[in-house]
Length: 458
Image 1 (tube, rainbow, N blue to C red):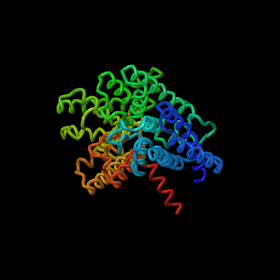
Image 2 (image 1 turned 90 degrees about the vertical axis):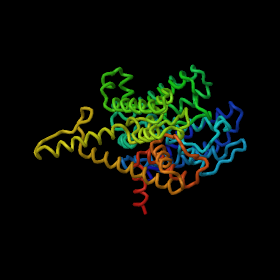
Image 3 (image 1 turned 90 degrees about the horizontal axis):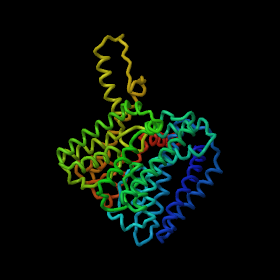
């Protein structure tokens, strides 16, 4: 555990650097930068203390998972400080401040603020920036900067849910991922600015779109067709595996076209858009809202609670299924769903054929081990179980069944769409949704490993 704290110290030092941006924004708009100076001071001194006090040793995967879980928890707590010390006469409770920060770093986008336009520009910038950091992952940034980790880098990389490398080493792979993320971010920012948004709106919208986060700096989202088209593209970019993006950059288009997860994502998306259009009669709403749901972004151009039940139902399905593995988006993920469905057909074949018959199980042309199938089923079962338990928790607080399922599916999928008043909800409801956001963003197992380590220590 001491070694883990040493790595947390380094991560806090890197985290503190990003607090300089909202400080600059505060000065530009003549706002108080004190909330960010307080956070910066705590982060940098805590980081230096942990970095110097605890020796960093080689990490295995369980420790990598613990660091991942602790990083999100610690950063979410630190990220809540600017909300607590916000100027302008706006008072925010500790629960609400932590909720907003958790929603940001997990790239969810659920918010306690009903009127975001009254918030200081520096706070609005910080909200969106937390999503941009959460989307890429501060640990990936950490790996791209630090060298000489050796086996530790493999453990930390794997703990983020990535398996395949796009370069020979983890450091080079992480650097490539950050480079791709930055290129898309700059292109997205430029396109949004050209579409008519102010520079501030373009930056914050890009932060939220590419990270599939969903925080906005306006109460009513933009309705211009050009802007919505750009935002839609950015959401889909964020929802696609970084490995696929690397192949696009290398012009290996056949490998992209033949990828089963890409086919599945766009196939399901087209079906959901068609169903939504048949019900709503609006192609604009159908396309944008289904992309927003499946990419786990949560931007809305209509009142979701007023949509017809069939559209609500497919929106819930879209949020649960999610998009690509190895992306910034949430949900169960297309690859797991495909593996589970295909393994059912494989199991039926095995049952009907002679016992000595050898039937290899392949997905996307690659053989899949039995252990991977088992883990996939365990993950899906655990995911659905937590979703049901969370929904039951909301039902006990007086919400209807469909409201509860929708809201927990949104939190677990780190989507951010809402059909209840989050700001006016009781603290217990916010606690349930925060737990779901953490579990969904961290893909469950890192949190379980952290809990197991805490129990074992006792």
